[in-house]
Length: 173
Image (cartoon, rainbow, N blue to C red; front, side):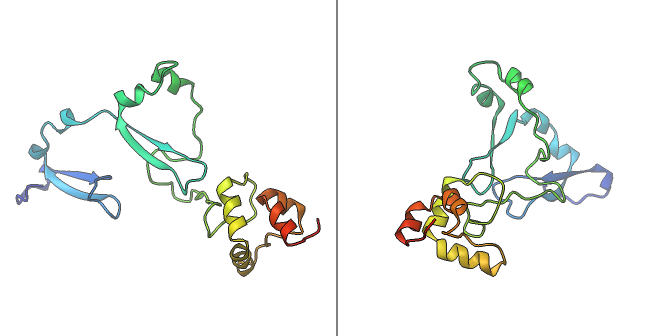
């Protein structure tokens, strides 16, 4: 890290930087002399990393904060007790990277996925997008060989909140 030339590579410590404000394209690897890292463990902060999964967001938001501040968020019981009683997450990975082959979660409230058939509930954001851009949504679905949102289909009308549009266009249900 200091730019010193090293004769014996056994003196080098490999450092993988996973997150840094100036890091743009994922983790990087650098090397440092062990003596350059003296005391680094004592400088480390006690941090907690967690994700916020908002219903209408494109994906989770990762938050990193000091453990003491996070622990203060629990008011009914100690955070350690809250964590012990919490439901285990299955199928996810503990870090910011997904496991190889893990299925990416589709955001149906986005213009590229709104209106596609899916088993989950329809969010208000997806309904609004389908309501406001029905022609574009149906054009995209048709181009992809997927069934379109049909105003004559009572299930589609109810699912996407299209009652007013169906009535306005005189579609009989």
